[in-house]
Structures are given as C-alpha cells and as structure tokens.
Length: 322
Image (cartoon, rainbow, N blue to C red; front, side, top):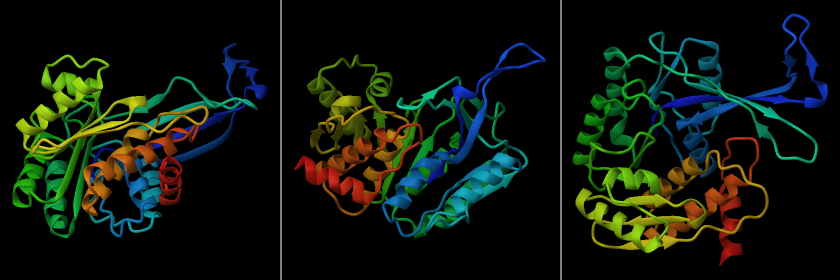
C-alpha cells in the first residue's frame, strides 16, 4: 500500500452539554468522546486487513508528532501489517483530518467543519529516496500494489514524480502483477497501472463530456483502457461501477439498494482494496465488480466513521443480492 497515510480523529460532541465561554462569549462545543483511526491509505489498509490479506506493507511517511504516534500505533496493531517501509520523519507533519461530529439521540451523526493538517512544501528528496528504497526492496514479495495519491497539492505527499517513475519501472518489470492507482488530482502522466477513478475524473482525464448515460461512460472507459493498455475502473456513485479492459471487455455492475441512512466516507477506498484483492486472487472482472460493490454498500451504511467492509458482511450482501 503506497500512498498518503492519514489520521482520522473524530470528536463526538453532545449538543445537550453546550455552554457559552465566559472569556469570549462564543458557544462552546463539549467533546464527550475522542476516537482516532487510520485514514486515506490507512483506510485501504484497514480493508485489506478485514479481507484477511496475509502480509500488508504500508509504504508512506508520518511525522514526529502526536498524530504520527497514534497513526503508527493503530496501523501496527493490525494483523499482518509489516512496517518495514513506513517512515517516521521530522521533515513532514502527519497528515490528519480532525472531524467534529454532533451526536444527537435518534439522529445520524452530523459532521461540522473539519480541521485538517497537511504539508504545504514539496516532499524532501531524502524522504522520496527512502520511500523508493523501501518500495524497491519490498517489491519482489508483493502480489499486488495499490497506490493512493490523497493530497490536494502536487508533490507534497508520497506519490511524487520520482516515486511514480519508480512505480512505472516496477510495472514494466512485472506487467502481470496487479497494480492499481487512484489519485484525487487525476491520473494524467501516471505509468502503466490499472486506473481507478470516478466519473468526473474520467471526464477530466479524457477530455470527453461524461453525462449520466451509462453506455456513454462505458464507451469512454473502454476507449481509455485500449489507449492506456491497462484496465480502467470507474465508480458511478449510486449506479455502481464500470470496468473495462484493453482487450475490449466492458462490465457494469449496478450498486446494491440502500438500506437506510448513508455516509459515503471510505466507500471509494473499500472499492479499491476489494478490486485489488479480487483481481490478485484470480477473480473475473464481473466478480471483482460485484465484490467491490458489496464492500461499498456495507461501508456507506456505517455512519459517523470511516467504514471497513469485512468478508462476512460482503458475503452476506452477495448472497442476498443473488
């Protein structure tokens, strides 16, 4: 798992305990519970653990700060995780999302304005070199590689041009190995890896207007897969996932029905983890899409948290959908 690891910190607020600050005259939100868990690339790791993957190698960095301590401790506690490539560095702060949640009886949690901590300068060369060294050293042991570019500002996270170049070399050396890339800033100029994106990112990458027509999105995804030479997966929100291969195979798996209130946080990461594991285990395109859809369905019904889909939950949803 190569990418930007984040600490998701949730502050649960009880509005019944609200008061006014004597010093400022402003409302006070009283936090009654604090919980933290790995986010971004850490969310994908959580899903890989839940799927029973034997050995998981996080390749990324965290800072010498309290958030980094919490993040490393949480990841280290997960079964099968090897920390050989997880770098602690004073050159970076730990990427974190602090999420205040209003918790009211009988209502879904409501997230208030988030407090984010990010890096605003380019990732130092010494950190890039250490990440590339870890990736190169660990690569021979890997059946699949997932790459997640989560940061908004280019070159401030793990997936820099130098790291992408190293990933491209690994992809050329073992083209049969599953390697999936996902970036919130888009996948333009990425090496020959399997692309995973949403409909808006597909439109931005191809320059073709992608409307609500599934057949049109299938056509655009198929054209991209042929030009790129690797498979392409496109999530289309409540309508499921589209998959396309360079050889012309195109599948659309509809999303499962909603079963109540939803929270979409973490759904895309669950899809990425399940696609990678399914494909690496030899599943067909259609099977991989159905498994990933079930994982997303399980996660979006977990409210007020960055959800994780277990094999039992995925299995139960697949059986009920059959």
